[in-house]
Image 1 (spheres, helix red, strand yellow):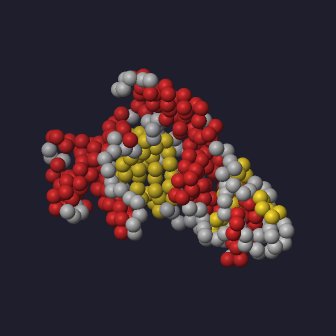
Image 2: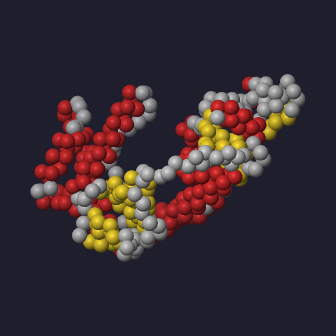
Image 3: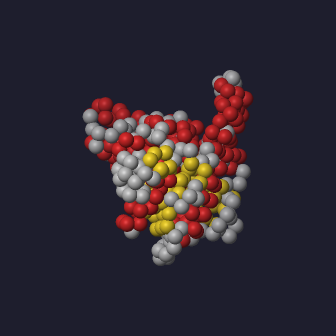
Length: 365
């Protein structure tokens, strides 16, 4: 599967698409309400097929005319989302994990709806797409490859609307190549500490823009509710967040491509991100380790680079990379350098961890 993303021309002025996304949000909230009411009355889960039949009947009622705003496949996809949400909720409850069922959403915060085989038509030559009865032009940045399976119409907090095409794409497998290998240790002070000394610094885009975000939030809080000034202030804040997110994504893609071009084998450590967020929440979110690893895997698959992830419970920081002695006394993260009691070599905590990660990753390869 491959995903193509295109932005619509003048998407803020396409009021019909915004109205359709709002209608999808209303349908979602109505389905959530039905699920809650059904469980309260009968003590069991509402069947998805029965819910879809009920929505078909509601279409004829003028009170629920908004259901007719979007195609029948989009309505079915909303019920699928809720069904998947409840499946995940019950599975997490069974495994004693913290979870909550699908809940109500503010209409302006509802983001998207999905169409499968009907309700749309693509005209690639003219760079336009028909949704329902209207044609919309989009920024055609690249050609679409493969057979289109689903189309998702999605809007962001600024109000821009994007089209996501998920295509069934058979890509020729790239054979793994030979070359240099490296081990990386993720950190807070440095984004990546390399086993060969070629470290990558943490950009921390959110921290750089924190003063501007603070001013925009303060400006928003001073505006009267439901006023045009408050709406403008909210959009200004959303633009700053969007710019921060785009800068982070750009850094991730450029860094991943540079690393994959230089090394044939990259060894990483599996991270307990949930636990790290409890300790350094904002900073972990700012660095975006999980998204970076996903992008790194994507770039590696195109260039034939091998990604090896070692177990998160391996004590990479406590083991001497010179003699293999395990020093259990340096569990405290405040200790940044330590001297091996066995061989006397002084180690930088992160560099030592990166060397151990490379050694373990290369041995498993």
